[in-house]
Length: 150
Image 1 (cartoon, rainbow, N blue to C red):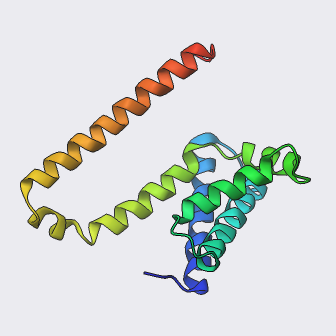
Image 2: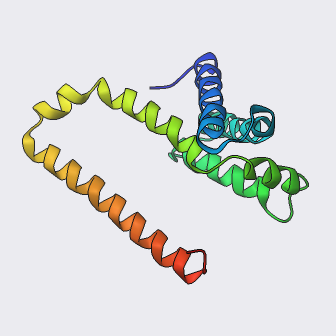
């Protein structure tokens, strides 16, 4: 399903407000301090969505956003320092809060259909989510311990 430009802008505006709010409530970073980082992330997301509609490759939008973020923060970028400083004020979990909310709303519309497909799919989904979480936690623990962060 392709979103119109108005829908993308509206969704990004809601995401930006949610990100700033999560950053404020969860981490005590004021809205004024969060604003440049939120704008950087939203501009990268909008550009990624735009590239997705222009470039005929079958890549997900998040791939375009990631590539743009890497290019914006790479040592050769003239805006590198600003991008890193602005995005550095956004706690990593603040965007995840709003993404999780969007994902939950998206899944809730299709939950009955998902359950009707069979109980085996529900069990597989629970096991996959649990395994993914545990593997991510283990990898994070190993890497942060190796780096001396914990």
